[in-house]
Image 1 (cartoon, helix red, strand yellow):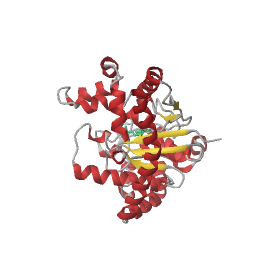
Image 2: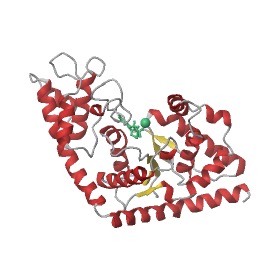
Image 3: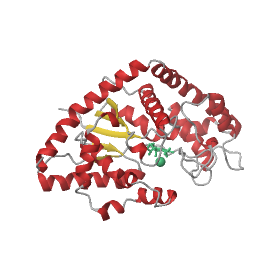
Image 4: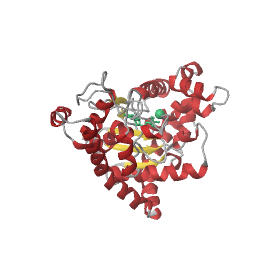
Length: 330
Ligand code: ADP
Ligand code: NA
């Protein structure tokens, strides 16, 4: 039988993915290739909803794709493409926007949060309709499953509602996507503020570990990571969030159980843990950085991979859009 389909996208809004992106999302993208037919997208259309610089965006989209290949997305097995190269995305988004209620869209909490930060008069209509474009991303591929973190649950709910609504108005057209919940998903926190999530919008760059940064820089960040004033290395996410975060990263990258690590560090200090973790991270990023550089050093080859990805994506998205157009009377 055919494998279930999975769709996911990530914005090219930073110069590098960080360890939170990898441990919370991208490593699952790689793993899902084993069990699913995967469509993965660098969502550059989403990345222009809050202001951008064209040169920077173009470069970030390329670096994002190069990193995804470097992390193990296999173009033979998965379809990786850049959203703006598949015009069916905004075409379907328009249709879906016409069956979305204004009130319904207004209830999206991520828009409320982001527009509040920008000042609501300055937020774009694109930021407001962002979840509708996201629904189009997913529905075009008839995805069965979408890996989602807590922050995206409401948006996936909207995608499901729009699929069901379109199907009942115009006849069965779209697969209703289900959330793919990953069991041991690691929530990585900020090194400087260990109760907040590691995020590209963190208040200090010292709180984030970028996959593409120099290992010496990473080692320095880990050395200055905020911990508690105790000495004992135990896993206590509430009482010792800084140490718990370091142990979580260590365990995820080394494959060693947290209990094993805690036992191995009995009688040792935070400095020992930090020093060893810096080495573990350096070992982990070295081949990723090398492979990323390899893709970026051969722009023609990267372009070709992305053109092939876009072609494979359109082979699915095109027929879906044509069916939707036909159903609505175009
Ligand atoms: P950021 O928070 O840096 O803006 P995004 O919101 O673009 O990152 O997230 C991209 C993906 O990475 C999402 O699937 C998100 O759930 C995941 N992710 C981001 N930060 C973390 C984190 N600190 N821990 C775990 N997963 C994360
Ligand atoms: Na974010």
